[in-house]
Image (cartoon, rainbow, N blue to C red; front, side):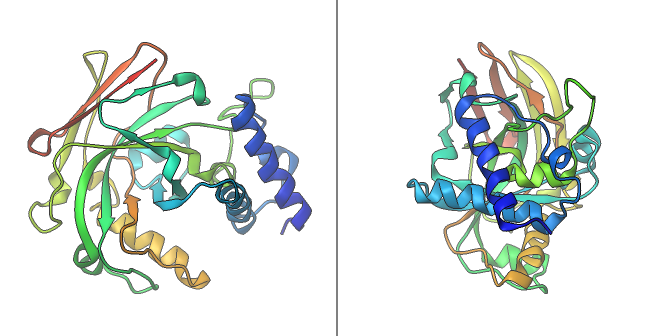
Amino acid sequence: MLKPEHIKAAAEQLYNAENQRQQIPALTLSYPDMDMDDAYQVQKAWVDRKVAEGAKVKGYKIGLTSRAMQMAVNIDQPDYGVLLDDMFFADGAEIKVDDFLDPRIEVELAFVLKDRLEGEDVTIFDVLNATDYVIPSLELIAARCHRTDPETGYTRKVIDTISDNAANAGIILGGRPMKPMDIDMRWAGALLYLNGQIEETGLAAGVLGHPANGICWVCKRFAPHGVALEPGQVVLSGSFTRPVPVKAGDTVHADYGPLGGISVKFV
């Protein structure tokens, strides 16, 4: 377990990396004995600083829930991060690419809750009953620490990703909201276009067999800490495509078929 001063110092490094637009080495290089609890404490310290500056918690993202994502980043277990109000962008927005470090786009479904969810025994049916609606979404991820160290080739660990708020940087909601029982979400699919060319395709079943299972996972993860998912919160269930890097001048369009589409431009 890291000492409190190390937790604070690590969170400060990530905070400064984002503000100064300069990636830092993976924290596990400096703190090789970090464990998962340490990583979530670093994440919490980073979020707490953001909240102290006026940001509001709007929900959570669950990451690395599909084999596509786990293979893409060489990490073999899910994680979670916190969604803040300043991370939300409108469908059709122009997003300044220089505001983010190594930005990439992922295709997901977002759950908007109407009831509280908590505990180790939350089932997929509890999640569906507690969900007001599900809506197509894109997640903008960034990396405040190097994915691969440019000097040593060291690859970041899941602990580094967790510390980095699960690499979350933005969320775009769009398309057609749907009631959770109105569609078999396993077969909800998307075509992800980059500058008019298809880059990725996928089905939501890639997320733990059903995207609602991602919500079950985070409830179980929160249970020992007495944390619940609250009404009105937005929960990203996890990407069912690999992340697509973006740069200034790129236009991204995600076509969810009968559920509509989302488009953003990076400037």
